[in-house]
Amino acid sequence: MISFVRGEVWKVGPDYLVIDTGTSGMKVNCPPSAAIGSRVGDHVLLHTSLVVREDSWTLYGFQTEEESLLFDMVQTVSGIGPRIALGVVATLSPDELRGAIANDDTSTLKKISGIGAKGASRMVLELKDKIGFPESTGLFRSQQATSPWRMAVGSALSSLGWSAREADLAMDRVAETNPEKVSTTDPDISVLLKAALRSLDRS
Image (cartoon, rainbow, N blue to C red; front, side):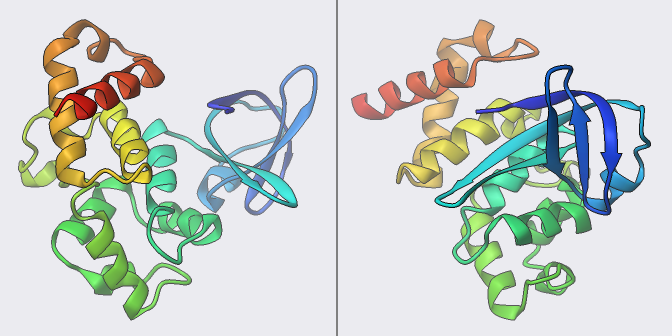
């Protein structure tokens, strides 16, 4: 997996950038705000998500790791693919998305291109136990509750069939037994995921 792309902007499109990494030029699809805000010659770092299809490999890039993780999480909702997920990130900030999900605010979700009433309801239903609360509400169990490692591990556990409650309990155990691993600035997600899976196997 390509976690990030760093280099000089070689070309700017309406919804993509071509990044000169020194050995190749990588086309990265991104929210229009990220593309329009860049200029040829700028040095950038984009957090990326690689979407693999039978006929294509497409790289999506975001200015923050949180946006990249939410892009992946939104695609776990039935009927939502990368195009709509990109629209979600382009339309709503991470905190705005969490607020809409937490408050069953389907009107806000319907502002996203490609999301109708049914799609908005599915987003609320399928993301409510995964995405956490907006920081402004003060409803987080702790600052760690929606830390990037928990979002990544939780999304992976969900894709493997574990419920949101089971995933939360497993991640709580991981945090308790591996404080030094979860407190680093760049935790190893694969190690934490394996620890969570071992915890679930013992439960």
